[in-house]
Length: 146
Length: 146
DNA sequence: CTGTGTGCAAAACGTTTGCATGCCT
DNA sequence: AGGCATGCAAACGTTTTGCACACAG
Image (cartoon, rainbow over all chains, first blue to last red):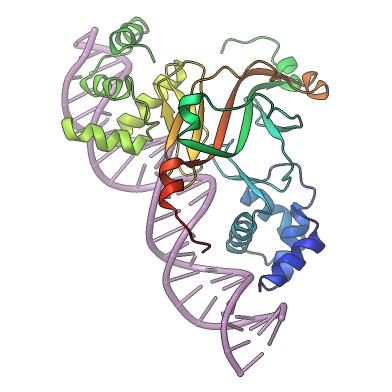
């Protein structure tokens, strides 16, 4: 996502209105590396903006997504998660605690589709999800077969 | 997923009962490359087994997932999709028509986490999702800026 | 002043659960 | 015969929608 300032400019330019709620959402997202869900944002926002509604959070996330200013992540089957970081990066998900780590690495080298597919699919983007365990969870799990 | 025969053997061995519904689900999944959702399976199954219920489909998918006989895919934020193909492969999703293509290629070479993360995360598995357009959709979309 | 954006409540959607009945073993 | 599996209906959490009011432009 661009800076709050730039986002405001973009939205204005496109005829969107800048409301206090939208501003608050932009601010909550700027530099946010927690891959929040709509609800997490809502809860965080409510502290400073007690009147904000779920609807507005959803609406604004949708708008930002449509404008390509945030990414919707397909890592959590339970709920949608959003990432304002548009730079090329990937994610590692701890299957134990659910923590999502950013993986900054350029893997694009060598990631080309096999010949058969090259003729029937044009890749615009790709995402790599690493599944495993963070060391926190690996160490705390000393031994149990449940 | 193993063959229906083998799955039946595995389940029997573990004390699960082999019901006509479960058999039908195994058969519907065997060799299925459509990455079906629970609902798609349910609809397909109902043709031959009009009495089958959503609950049973969900239950059985869960069982197969727990046994590691099918994979749950994180590609569609709307609903969970299942893949009986356990061989190492990835997916390409057409953002236009939603078609999901299998990508058979060994990308593991060179896909290691950056140093900082290596110490805090242990990768068990990874999945690559390619996003783009299938040529079908690319060609039918001759021109429009909407 | 106009119309987009907001917030509420209700609905929709995919999925899970509780429970009585059925049927595999 | 016993107990797990089934199917129904209700509950659940997330997301969407309809609508009256508010407020940014």
